[in-house]
Image (tube, rainbow, N blue to C red; front, side):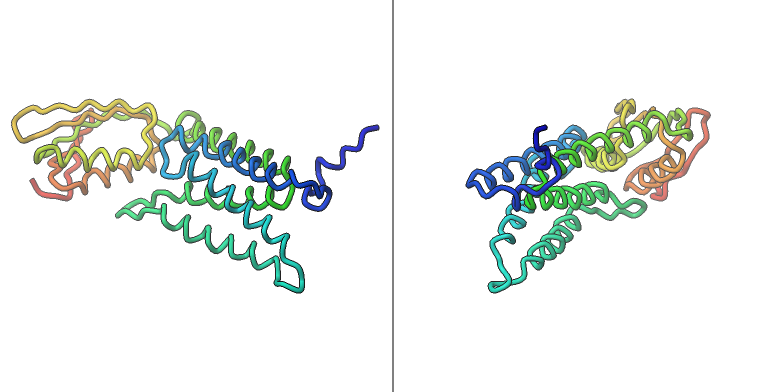
Length: 240
């Protein structure tokens, strides 16, 4: 029977061939591509390039740690510094708003990508590939649950009236809508008169996200009103 122990054993300790390190580096890039594919499709700040480099960098640092011996230093310190450095990188993609904090999921993905890169750099290639596929599928399933299968989803129809200010208000509104990832939403922009704008928003969000979204839209400067389909008026916090 063929020896299949290479599936779960580390290639760093089992193999001493010169091709091991290049293969581990390429495997780390592949893992980053698998994890970053889902982020790239949803146009997140950290996509294919970022997560591939995170995986590759973590793998290289981990491989370098194997070059340290007890006489030259503690190899465990390299892994500890990877975790610290990734923490700073993840903090850079988190944005704080008045009612929402966006980018937390992307920061967590960067953290996980670094862990996968460390696993590959330590020689556990198949484990890294398996974890990458697991993370990719997990993010897809969670996204489908939040946008299609969540039990609290309900259709809404709102119309926003705002002062356009040469398109500046529309840009602010679009930025808020992008932060909430309104998949499947129908947006209809129009200009009923000079200097004013109108947005008709039709979507199917969870109730908790709806209230947060309406609050963010109402806080945008120069928003006059937010009117529901049933003519229920929600006054914006900024006076017209």
